[in-house]
Length: 344
Ligand SMILES: [Zn+2]
Ligand SMILES: [Zn+2]
Image (cartoon, rainbow, N blue to C red; front, side, top):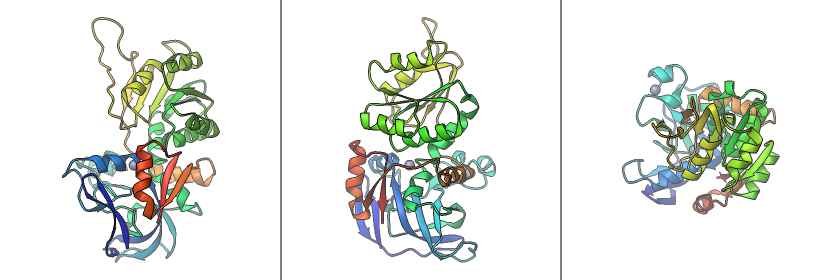
């Protein structure tokens, strides 16, 4: 079968490999769709030894059941499924509470992160990672497993704060941000303010349910402040899907006293928080910061339910597997609108 493998640090190649056989407790899936994630670029750029090579990438997976391994039952041939990508240890305190995204094993395993992923004609996954799609189009479903689940979990962490009359700022309307806007619109009554550098992204945000859009740049803080009111008011929650210095500076200047900064992006910027003796603190008093990671299996079931209700829909750009390398280049160059999805 064909597979897109990380063969060496920085090298992504389309190779021929044997079709894998499911072991005990595993299932072979025929791949239907795989989302291309920014974190795949981080895997590609990581130094030698951080990720195994060769390894098939792809952790946003939707496919059809093709073969059950020994001891597996309850899935029918051809059934469409989504894959929960985290491989928690199942034994630690966090896993026992269903929070495999907080598994105490370091580094936590993942399909397409520590073992072969879905950018191939077939993939083998543990059967307990499968969730039924219930009629959802797999091309739509693949991005739900990360681009949908990650913002859903991030929003869940602040759900109590997102009451009617509050504001939530969403910075970066890409693969995750455009899902965040829809999840906020579907599950909260907060006023949604979307921020991005691109007009097309802001138009997308508006279509997805944002109440206001603000062009990122020198005037952004003032424009957001016109909507939220002056300090100590502000946005109760700021979701930053970029996290470079510029977006973090915007985030800390618009968050309310007692607000929440939710840092999802992997941009590597710096957010000063520690108060000093001179001058006002860099963030308002009582501000919290959280670094969410992916989500739980139960939350993925809720994300799929939202999509089945028609309340969450990924904006996708599809590519054949043979154009995977080009798709990642376009992702790197910021040319993908919504989520890129590879269709093997
Ligand atoms: Zn990802
Ligand atoms: Zn664990």
